[in-house]
Amino acid sequence: MMARAVIPVPAVVSPELRQLAREYLDVRNFEDVLYLVNSGNRLSCLRALWRFIPEANRASILAIAISTGDAPVMTRAFLCRALRSLRGTPVADSDRALAALSALPEVVTLFRGTNEREVNSGNWSISWTLDAERAQWFATEHGRFRVRDATPVVVTAAGIKRENVAGLLLSRGERGALVLPEVIAQAKVSWKAASK
Figure (cartoon, rainbow, N blue to C red):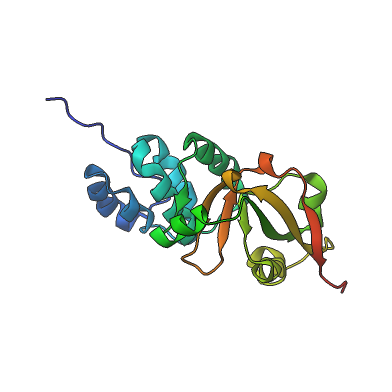
């Protein structure tokens, strides 16, 4: 019988938790390894483990990493590759999210709290929401916009075919929708913060 490959413990796991991570990885418990790192490192941890995760488990583990972690810009390329590799397998953080994804109308309006720099570049992130008010909160209150430069914050709206929504995350109350940037054909500014 052939021995299973040893999966390296991701560098983002702190030294005091590396032995526990090793035990989880030896039994292929990827989900619990993600919970050993802080939310800002969860997606980096997933990126390090991605090639070892069985394809059948990738969508659910990706949902956990996104819905319980923070999505820094440095993981954008990885997240896009991960979504593409799922080849249509929906990413959902619960059965309720999976049912809600199936129940979306043929064309759904998604919103994104962002800034004019992202709008002008057309270099969209994967995280959108079904809720315009939540997008406004992201634009005005989320940490990445709290300390603002001179770039005005906005909410954008885009009509997307349901089949292009790669996932739905409901556990944090954000009604988050995951969309590959290339399916955002046209996004329009639907709200702009007042100038300071």
